[in-house]
Length: 108
Image (cartoon, rainbow, N blue to C red; front, side):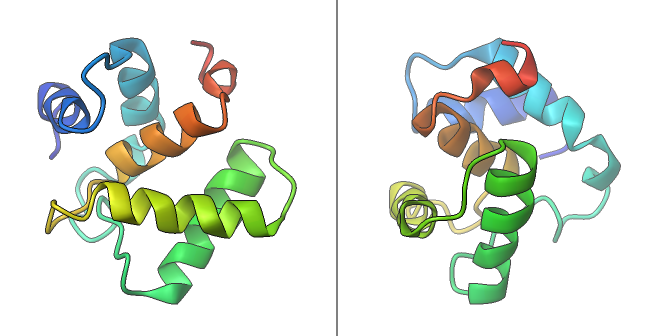
């Protein structure tokens, strides 16, 4: 999923009222990893990957305090996107950003 239209379409599967400006902002923030397929996906079966999402995205990027609620939110998001074999990082981050009401981090 290296183009914005595909990213928006993927998010729409999980949020029919998709905020396209937020998808675009997250998409643009991830530009350095667009060429690496593995980096564009989240592996819900890999605890170290989920910890990286929590630490690098939720805590560092969104500015949330470490708590069990973050782990629960990551697992809940895994459950939400379980129908997708390939879990797009953009969609994953979008859903977490919306869950915590942190759209302002992306200026949206």
